[in-house]
Image 1 (tube, rainbow, N blue to C red):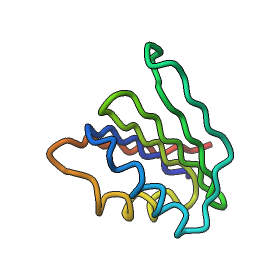
Image 2: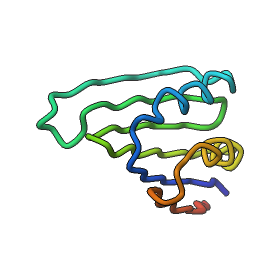
Image 3: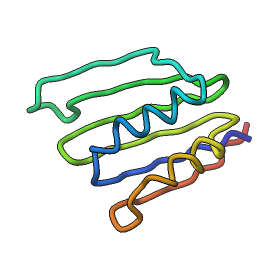
Length: 97
């Protein structure tokens, strides 16, 4: 079973802190794209951490975090330590074969 966390938060200023967590876990960036601000997404970053894939999507003050893979729960627990609970919505999906 693969765990998949979807996190929406209204504090895009956490970007540096989340990237710091990922780099501390030996993750590396595999893709990054900046789009014109009138697009649906302003910036997309994709990281891989062993068997876990993490994407960060920025649009205005909104930060969308998508964590999926074998170690998703470990990364989710680390990221939750810095997320503002009053401005964060989390969904967890368990994916089977």
